Image (tube, rainbow over all chains, first blue to last red; front, top):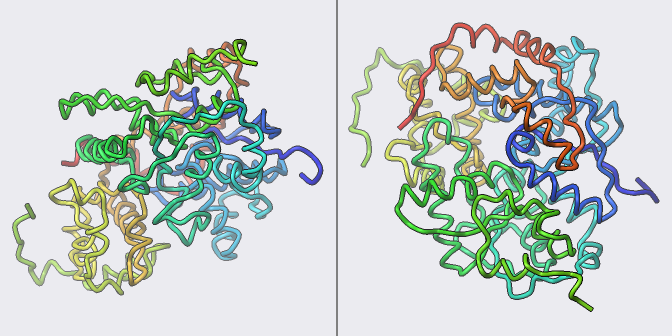
Amino acid sequence: MVGGKPKYLIFLGCVIPYRLSSYEISARKVLSALGVELVEMPEYNCCGFPIDPINHDTAIVLAARNICIAEMEGMNLLTLCNGCFGSLHKVNKMLKEDKEERERVNEYLKNFDMEFKGSIEVKHLVHVLAEDIGFEKIKNSIKKPLSTLRVAQHPGCHIIRPRKLVGKDDPENPRLLKDLINLTGAKCVDYRGENECCGNPIIGVNEKIPFQMAKEKLDHIISAKAEALITVCPFCHIMFDLNQPRIEKLFNVKIGIPVLHYTQLLGLAMGFLPQELAFDELRVKPTIYLKKFLDYNPTLEV
Amino acid sequence: MEQPAQTVKAGEINSKFKYEISKFRGAEKITLCFQCGTCTADCPVSRFSEFYRPKKIARMIQLGLKDRILSDKHIWLCTTCYTCVDHCPQDVEIANVIRALRNISVRHLKSLPLVYKELAENLMKTGFVYVIPETRIKKREELGLPPLPKTSPEEITKIFELTGLLSLLGTSQTFERVE
């Protein structure tokens, strides 16, 4: 990477290709504009996270297989999803540090002519932006600061916890996403329970509890007078955006908080048009606060 | 509202169960739980569930109430947010303890939530836990996105076979909801 462009293999996971191309489209736009080269995986499979509850070994081998593919390509992995990051990072760290476990997993991998060597890193988008690209470069890329916009952050769980596994942010007071948001000129407001879970991982067995968890978060966000919620995980995004009308119906309330991928917020501030960032794919439509930035026409400026 | 108290019968106790759990990665410290209740107090699910109490789960493991806790469907309500792991003063990684319980429960009782069976079957079929519609894959080009990388369903099936999940899926019962 020295002297050249930062280069990563992009790990898309399952949720993004299944139903959230808005995240992928906006992420590719802003990363490319920041001089990052994204390389496609020659092949991959699910990160293993959804299988961990029923069989830990299956989940580990699924993750390790992806890491081995990245090792063969000789590039670090960049994930857009917190779940993928959590699974791949955990297994990567564990197999690097624990020789016995590495040998045990390598026995499985032999069947696929693969061997875990421990030569790459797994990074989430937020870590790539904050650590590898850096605040200065992002700040310099802002052409249209989103001043007057008040937003709230939802970092999600697996890029902050467990602390001893991730260790890049303070799980009790997460700063990385907040700082990245503030670079866009928007104000990232404090609210109660910023570091709490969206509830999505158990939606397959119980809808009521996650909907209550998400509703409570949205209530706190409204109390803090935020005009939009910013996410960096497709699971969390689905919970707050796609499911928001269902939450409104269940509790018989109007919420109306637009939920943006961080890459959409950053893209807007960098001067991309809303249609280039797939804003039309959002379920909750932009409110008046957000609209003034979306209706902006760059040709009228100067 | 808590569940009504239940009598613990001596014959029901498997005092070695805690050691079975502590063999699992991340669940080693289950014996150290001193019932302070931090995990339950800080658990966002416990705030909204009448029944999900990680503190109680830890105690049941220590007491050796193996059959009762393995068949308690509330173990499927953990979201793996890891707040309990970060906050436990005894370093008991309770979310990992619950993962161990779930894994053992699937193996012993041959029963799992339907959603996991569906995700696992999709994964074997397509390499992803969802069946991505052909129209979505085609639409990528229209959206200016590169083609979706290929997957190896045969290799995934092999992983399922080697790790024992394939035979479990074939023989397990499923249940849909946990209230």
